[in-house]
Length: 288
Image 1 (tube, rainbow, N blue to C red):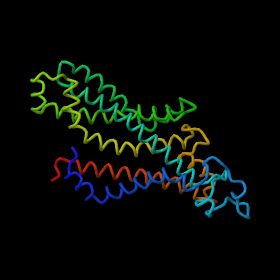
Image 2 (spheres, rainbow, N blue to C red; image 1 turned 90 degrees about the horizontal axis):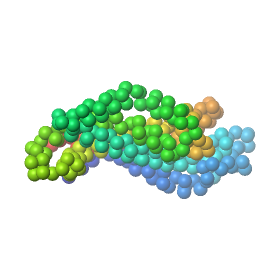
Image 3 (cartoon, one colour; image 1 turned 60 degrees about the horizontal axis):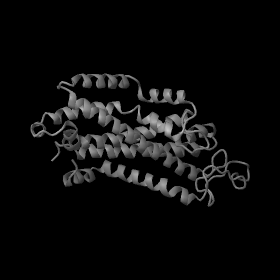
Image 4 (cartoon, rainbow, N blue to C red; image 1 turned 180 degrees about the vertical axis):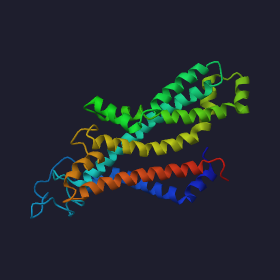
């Protein structure tokens, strides 16, 4: 679990520190960006949206990053897109990690006992889930759903990404279950749910934290892919993936429409992945 040594190892990792800064800046941008821009993300500025030559207005005191093809403030849309991406990423990750932890704990505890048939059934379900390429599965379900809402996106992403987590937690649970203090808890008459919640779950929390951090980055990519393929949230909702899709038609004349959301996706994924690697190293029991 987390202690002072883990904290020192985390902040001694330069990559983890950089990732933490990127994540903090992303959160600040999502919170403060709409306030700083002063523009509604879906409102077009027909008065100052074009310059004297009729081209889309670039950076100015009114529009810091210029406007998009419909003359909507680019900074405001990027900030609202950050809110959507973070909301989807955090909530979908919570669903995924929760499902994976429950299945992994139950399967791992049942393995090698009279209830091992439950472990076999759960692992066959995990094997089926892992046999499908994740993004392809998400896109197929998103296309089948048709018109989507934020709830639909959360459920699609959260309920299709827990299989790997379940396998990792099952393996860790099997290791912990074989320790002496678990046998002592059984001998004292503690119930199975109590043993899992009080003794096993705290000992698998470290891997769960690391998986959750990496999962947030995965969810940002998945949501962006759905939006880019136009099976995500419908317009005019600002999402980074849809902004990429809309901006590519004007990439030659106005590259910022593609570069801006692309850079934000890259930095967000990089930040959460660096934090995840830092957490993995900090929680590594083999470190001093």
